Length: 551
Image (cartoon, rainbow, N blue to C red):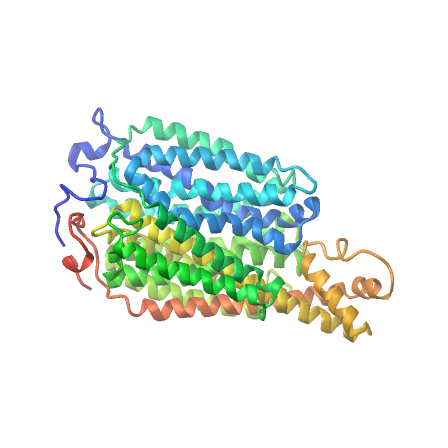
């Protein structure tokens, strides 16, 4: 692979030698820059999981349904996926540091507004709206933050820096459940307010790090940005609402089909645009294709598992928010330990071994975890939760780093936009699909239980749907209210309903095992090439470059 980096679209790497140390006057301080970017992106990762722990309290106080609560989670992930490509492009055009700071401000202001949501009729629209704005801020922040890390580290140190960046930022997701459980015991609103001091630290460190700001005055592909946002929005809307509208609904399929058609038209449009939002030619690199496919299927499980495991713990295991956080900690112990191993494998042998081992371990872990859900015991599940987490930890940093290292013919901000769009779109689809499965199976299971208690089928079906929509984590005290034979039957059946919900979650976790198994099949097709030198940014496409080293 070539080493010419004197021209092209991407950010110039920092010079090696004394300048690279960050100690010479005027040069960026690498340690401060990396710390600043980690503080900034930590907020985006924490917010993917922290809301799940507080979900039952938010539902109870604001009077939301479980479907509406999923949209509080999903709105953030959807706007992340829809606007990541735009964020990466804006970062390249207007400067990485500038866009990172703007994104941080948008994120923290909208986060504070989420914490200030008023109770009443406007609560749902307020919370979902500002969660969506949070996602936009994160979509501006993350590609710019990654481009900053790349710009200040020379190529011989960049691999380790990126492995640390992806490993720590991914591991910071673990802070969400732990912090969320502690803050929720005070007030669930604090899960949003905690971002304020973190953002202040990130901004101060960014200013102290003396990060250079390079920009390129090129046209912005607004039609492309609109197309990708509309396509993703419609697709996920159809998947998410399928549990409410039904899979036989014309509206459900209209959203999904039209959304996919818009995304297809977006790809056609981008291939012909003079200044596209995304240079799709980068997908000619087979390793880049595989990295993104592995990320897509693994992220369908990685982010949704926090929501579903948290609600399972609070409903089926009758756990408090703090106990639910400890339940998720098993997953993150495996994730944190394995992510360091995955980074070392990437440096020594390339991405392929880590991708194969991680996807295989994750698939087995989720499968065995699913089998243990009906034991209704945390003690019986910790090993398999840790295995599932270890599988994700092994593959996340290697797949992300390997994909970014292959930014040939495209800037790093742009390629980061691609990979993060893939990751977050997959997470939105995972939440939508698995949420539909969970709701459907819960209704079916609870209806069967109530019919067995002598409740007529029609009334049992209505009560089962009410139970499914009122998932709060305190089934004994927050079950369907009222009096009469049906309400009494529901109250008398709470222990059985906990088991019904656990069995419904088994379907979700088996689904997660399946998507990891699909990711494993793609990992087998990774070419195994390693990127050991800078990519030439002045080439038109990846086909012009040869791998620096083969396994």
